[in-house]
Amino acid sequence: MTYVIAQPCVDLLDKACIEECPVDCIYEGKRMLYIHPDECVDCGACEPVCPVEAIYYEDDLPDQWSSFYKANVEFFDDIGSPGGASKVGQIDKDHPVVAELPQQTHEE
Image 1 (cartoon, rainbow, N blue to C red):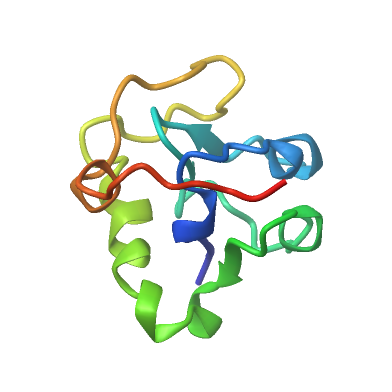
Image 2 (image 1 turned 180 degrees about the vertical axis):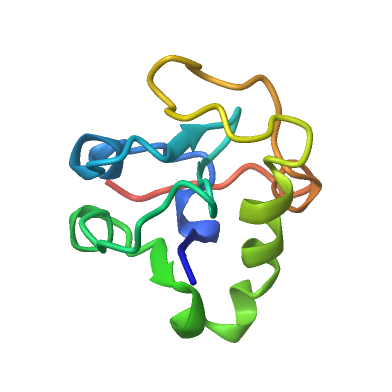
């Protein structure tokens, strides 16, 4: 089991979750952040600091965002497990589920 970042993160990239993650498993794509399922230790530190409530425990992911579980897992298919997001920096891609979304607007 792992935590999943869903659609509210798209085009926001707040990064408060990155600062809270003790194992550095939240990676930055072009339009959203992704939690590495093999590096996440299920501590839950990221969930309460997300300003748009985009982070869910896998079993609690709302049905309308169920495709984001697959997006978080498959994002790492060709990257593998780098062992820490801070040494990788932004990854110049997104999962197709995210890339195909229209530009998201967020109210301040």
